Structure formats: structure tokens, C-alpha cells
Image 1 (tube, one colour):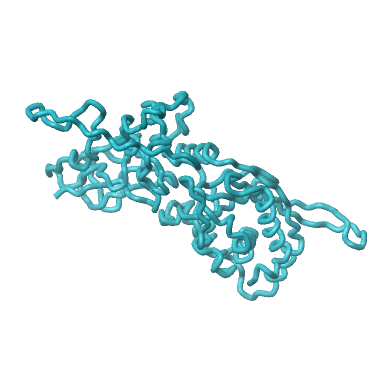
Image 2 (tube, rainbow, N blue to C red):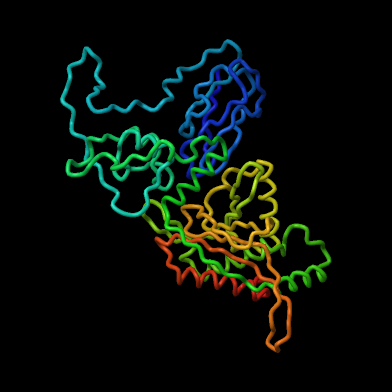
Length: 413
């Protein structure tokens, strides 16, 4: 019996995936575990493997198609084997105004009026780029469309299932000004680059981003690191006291002191998260991913450093478990290796804050006795969603991070 190849669900919030390219064609022979196509979700690009050995009997969905999770995209089996009716796996067609589900021989009946749609009055509206494009092409007001995707996100199927007749007569059903085709996020891009473009533009379009800059005096922290290295017999090869590890520890402690920053703002709802999961932005040769360190506040420095190093390595190899790309409550991104001092990091929505880290700067200054001394400063850039966080509390949070970095011993506990 032929075996189906389906669009996988790579994360808790993934509802659909984009087929970037097929690595095989109909009639090709594959072994179990062979990659057969490349897909993109909102979080990452991944290969889909053949579930069993055999021949690719039929490819149901082509390159560029966006397919709901768990829907059949191809069949694999023995040569000459019959493929099940793929039409049965498709979503039921949505009737548009004026259409009838009755056959020509059946007596027409009067349709009941559709239930009135409820307008989304306030807050952000989460919608996938493809769904937004379809809505704009059809002249639909997305504030009336109810999302069924992760975090209430509006998907393609939600738009296609929406009945414009359900909009109350007193309200306009069409978008006032349709965006030009050139404004479609990620237009002309493919694969991971397209996904990144869509996420960055969605972030900027759905949040009020403000960035605060401040530097931390890490002179003693750098001395502290060297002192530990000289006294520990075992070589510290897993980033146990690396700058990223120490900074992540400082961030987790600051988030405990300022829980309002460890939060999500999605679908008009602001939710403080009880667990602290830190996303560490990791550069790849063809883009950027954000592996998530689960329960970072409960880890020791050695465990934290080892986990950061291992997950970054797996992400670069493409072997990191897909579940570890989602669920972060706060993110850290660094351009220090590139010599950048300050920059403006873009929010990893639905998070309400992200910390950018620059390259350590050396400067001559006067100590308390008026003597010239050299100090080292770490530039920090905190971007927040000003819809839910004001500048003053955000500045206090950034100041708390600086305080922990300047009190190195506090990071040991």
C-alpha cells in the first residue's frame, strides 16, 4: 500500500509550510530517510525525509505551494502501485456567495444568512504573509477574520473560508487601500531568506519598536573570568564562563526581577510568562535562526554554557530538533564578532523585548584617585515593544542587567 508524505509540523505554532523545492521527481527511487524536499516554516528551513523505501509515485503539491500541516504532499510506494484519491485529503471547498452545495437535480433552498462577523477592535492582528496577500487581493477587512492558527494567527484557509457577507452592513467589508503587489513581504526571495524577510517585516509592521542603548563596565568581569580559568583544574572548553553565557545568566536574573519583560504580546493579549526561555540568535551561511534555551534561569553556568554551544553547533549543521526553534520568551542577538558597537535589533515577536550585544570597547578613564586606568565596556542595545512597555521600566530592566554584569560574583548563584 502506498505511503503518504505529509507536510510536517515543526513547532507548536506552525500551521502550514512552504515547499521551497523538490529534491526528487516522480518515478525516482528513494530509501527510507532520504531527503525528498525542502520546506520553510515561519521559524526555519528543513528537509522532509521519505518515510519508507520505494518509488515516488505522485507529487501532489508543487514548489511554491503553501500547504497546511499534516496534509498529503506526495506518495511513495512500489512501482505500479495505485495511489489513493488525493482529493479526499484536500480541505472541503468553501462556498462563496451565490454558489450552492446542491446538485443540479436537487431543489434549490433559500440560504440562511451567515452569522455576523465580529470586528477585532484593538491590539495587533496576527496574519501570515500569504493570508494577508489573499485578503488584499479580495478586498477583505482582516479585522473581521477570526484566526485559527497558533496564537490566533490568521491563515490562508481562514481567509478563503471567510464570507464577506458576514460583515455588518454598517461596516465596510473592503480594505480602504490595498497594498501594491511590490509590498508583499519577501517578494522575489526564496527559502530561508523569504521566511526571514516575512518575519522581520511582520515584526516591524505589528509592533511599536523603541531601542535603548547603554554600556556596562565589564572590567572586573573580564578579570574575574581569567581568575577562574587559572584556578580551575579542568579546561573550560564549553563556554562555561564565556561572555554569552555570563550575559545570558545576567539576563535571566534581570527577567526574574522584572517579570513584565518576560512576556508575549499577541492577538491583542499581553501575557507574562512564568518560565524563562532564552532565544540565542545564531548566524548561518544563508540566514539566521534562533535556538531556544529552555528554562535558562534554572541552569548552572556550566550547563548554560554547554547548552548554548551545543545548540548553536546543531543549528549550523541543521540537526537541531525543530521544537527548539520556538517558544522563546526573550532573545539575545550579538554583532560583537563583527566589531559592531550599537545597533537596533528587531523584535522576535510575540516577545516584547530583545537585547543586542556589541563588541567590547576599551577606554582610558580616571579612577577614584584620579589615576588613568584602562576599562572595558560592553555595549548593549535593548529593543522593546512600546505598546506594552514604556521607556522608564525598560531602562530600569537594562540597568539591572548592567548591575549584574558589573557584580561578577552575583552570576555564580
